[in-house]
Image (cartoon, rainbow, N blue to C red):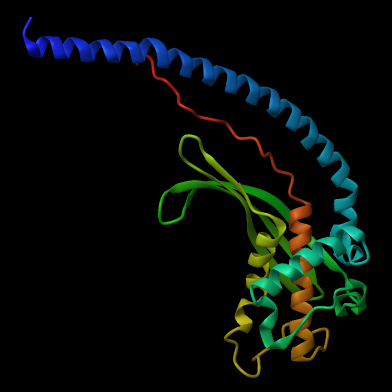
Length: 246
């Protein structure tokens, strides 16, 4: 046998050892993960069903007038988190306005009209793109009304990026609130002086009051959007899928 034949034979032996030792182990690992994932999905689905059942009466009350959340402990605790996030990133500096830590003292609670949640739905976009690759984007679509003022928000709540293993990133309340603030207040950064039309024409508010109200609304709507979001955290796992013949 020539030296080349000897070297090729030794190399082929190594390839065979890889197929015999590593490939079956990967297949066994994939099967174990699939079984564990299936069991976890069943466990999660039971919890999601329970969440949907518990949310239904809350959703009807909150949708009728989301201001009912203002005196609740849950909203108060979430507000502290959102305000701290806004302080850290300088988002409270807008026109030197600050929000009252006690939401029961907010302008929103004194208005003669309810804050209604007209529609809410969760969406999944498997064709989202971020300048690097396509990914799956999870978001909610919310429409709110306060008197004749209406606002539609579409906020991302999670993203699933390709790869082995896949990267599943869940956006917390502060991150979602960040997006809501910019959708509510973004136009204020470069707005003309004065605004050509009042933001809330039926409420007879000053410009400063209207800006204050938008900040209050951004907190409430971010909280509602996150609260209503019943979303699976268990995705299908691909690692590594062996094809026949390999």
